[in-house]
Amino acid sequence: MSIPLSTNHAPALCVFFVFAFSFGLDIQIRLEADDFQRVSQLSEPPSLTASIVRQVRTLVEQSHVLAPEFNDEISARGFDSFLKKIDPKKSIFLALDIHEFQPYQFKLDDQLRDESIAFAYIAYKRFLKRLDQIMPIVHEQIDVPHDFNVDETIPADAKMLDHAKDLSELTDRWRKWIKLDFLSLRLARSAEKNNEVIRGILHQRYRDYYREVSQWSADDLLEVYLSSLTSAIDPHTNYKAPLTQERFENELKLEMSGIGAVLKQVDGATFIDAFVPGGAAEIDGRLRIGDQLIAIAQDDGSPPTEIQNLRLIDVVKLIRGRTGTKIKMHVRTMGSENGQVYEIERALIKLDDATAKSELIVNEIPTTEAPLQFGYIKLDSFYQRSDGALNEKMDNRSATHDLKSILHRFRERRVDAVILDLSQNDRGALSEAISATGLFIDRGPVVQVKSRDGKIEVMEDQDQGVAWEGPLVVMISHMSTSASEVLAGAI
Image 1 (tube, rainbow, N blue to C red):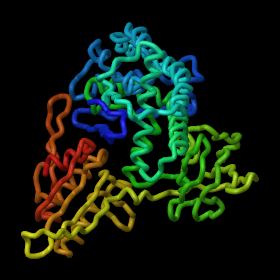
Image 2 (image 1 turned 90 degrees about the vertical axis):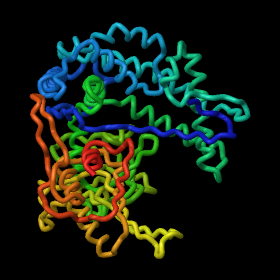
Image 3 (image 1 turned 180 degrees about the horizontal axis):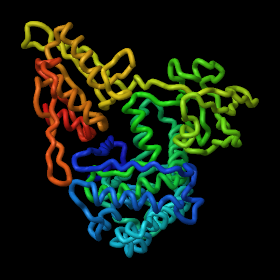
Image 4 (image 1 turned 30 degrees about the vertical axis):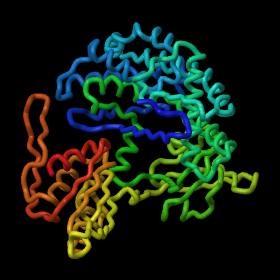
């Protein structure tokens, strides 16, 4: 498939990322490390890396249900996967770079046994070098006039492209990509035809892209590299860095610790964009929407960390922490050059926006005597606050608890059918998927879990009775993975 680059066509791209647990392991190793060690500033991996690599290899080879062994075949697949993850559009590396990387194709398993990730650093540092060459070209292409009457196409799938043989060929590709970006924005903003506005949007987009990919930490690179190798065994085995695992756990528990401020970035500057209702920042009352954060200091006496041009994910990392601890936020208030320092105590924040959502849809159908009522439920994760016990007094909310309440309301409204939308559900607790399935079946098996030694455990719904026994539609997509696959499969 190629994308036309003329005004006679409206290009559309759909990209799906698939995660699941079918065979795999989510590998989580917690070791203390400096989260802000930029790979660009390191000559070699941090000292803890070897220990992590050793533990990951041991866990996979000794615990994975497929009893795998890291070998040349896994090395070759991991090699390809890693390069695709850091350069998915083949927009940075040149053919000569890939040629120089080829000797490592069948050696990554050997490096793993030596507790080394040397290739990851070699490839990423070359990526940074090419990035610094290409970004000025990108901004030049944003400013040149584009002729949309010329018949041109560019492949939508990078598989149809070879790596550019030289910088001249890569420049022409970038010209077409920028032309496509320009055209897409013109189509998306039909009322806004100002080319200078579009150029401004694109300049900022690629400055943000550069800031994001050039500031990978040692943890970021390790996570991408090890997951490339483990997913070469099966696509559902991944290594999670500590921050990734923390975010995952927060999403499942529907809570995190922080100040309850929503941030945004513009050209490397961080601003307050909104507040979580009832959060520490809103209750404190001194921060205002539009205030710029300049630096953040912890309550351990260490000097403040300046955050200009720091990635948003790293700013958030500085703000979050244990409930009850304090941070000092150096702030430039909106409309003023004067700086302020606000000390705010972190508190627990409830993520109730991530819970199940429902609505009643009335549909006029000519063939029925009366309008049909559909109860629609959108569930994006199988969350489980606290230990998952359904105890409202303790606020131990769960996906099953909320689904049951919604279905009860639907029964009271005498809806004709229920639509359960799992099309964006890509995570969750297996126990929740099983108990949620039990809302629609009386009793019985839901899923089987096979261990490495061949033993099969049948996991059943033990609760008698159902919360809904009428017509049911379960919506899924390529995003419906992990726990949602269990419920959809059982239904």
